[in-house]
Length: 72
Image (cartoon, rainbow, N blue to C red; front, top):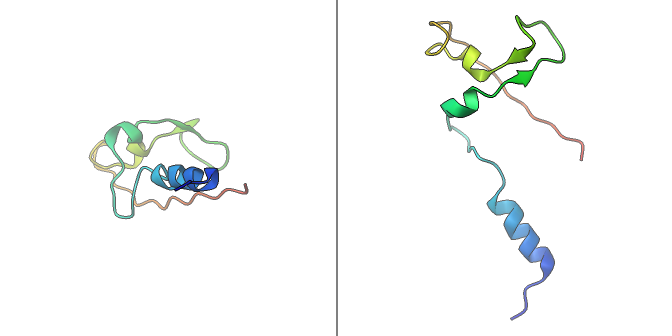
């Protein structure tokens, strides 16, 4: 049985597609990654998800919506 290159590429793509699933919590190391703020008002030049976590920021809990879009 011969497997085509396209099938192998699709299997690799689907097996590595995303770290998180629906309902997962963001890990602490990932919460510490700093993202530059390029638009809008924020208290600094970088945002970390840890800034929004009440267990890490002194009790100021936030609910956030993360939406990612790509035009590839």
